[in-house]
Image (cartoon, rainbow, N blue to C red):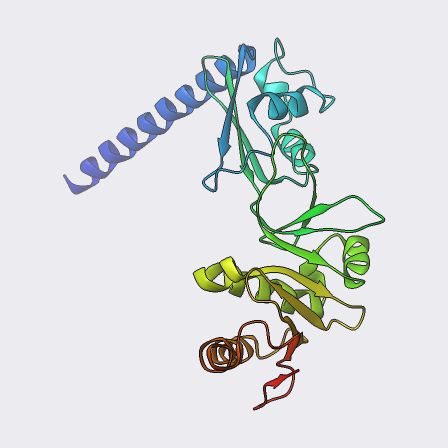
Length: 254
């Protein structure tokens, strides 16, 4: 009796596998015969940056060199199109998927700008949160921290702030400023020289802040806060032209 029950189970398993195989084959035949009728664009843009809109993304898809509408979905290389979309520096990620009705969905995630590079002899650019340098957009201007100085030329050569140790430190400092409500409102510009030393230009107070390299970031900002709370109220906000935070345990004001 036990042997007969096992045979029945084997027959049931085989029948199930055959049924599943039939459904998979049927779905593949439907997909292979299905043509792309519509392209839907979805933009993952939680930060409300508007460097690209749906029309821009659709144009990038159309200019990818791959025929989309009217082509069999099974013959469209979705990975290839995703790769070409990612060539645009404003796009952090792209995913394409289709359904059995002939709809192709293009989902893109935009990079978030955290700083803007300003130069006298070259076009401005943005730095994204992952360190990638993005070109400016005619459609949208993001109000972010300004970066200037000789170091920016090296940055534009690498096109990514996170590829060097100095760059990672500066990116960390940008993140620190942006995450602190007070410093985000107070620090208007960072000037970085060829040696990686930073001068901060505050929004309100008149002093330029000699920060040094982007090291011991939190401790140096603590010293600057101490300068604002203890020294300036007593001596006056316009008394000093510069304040130096570079040296450990010291605040030098002149």
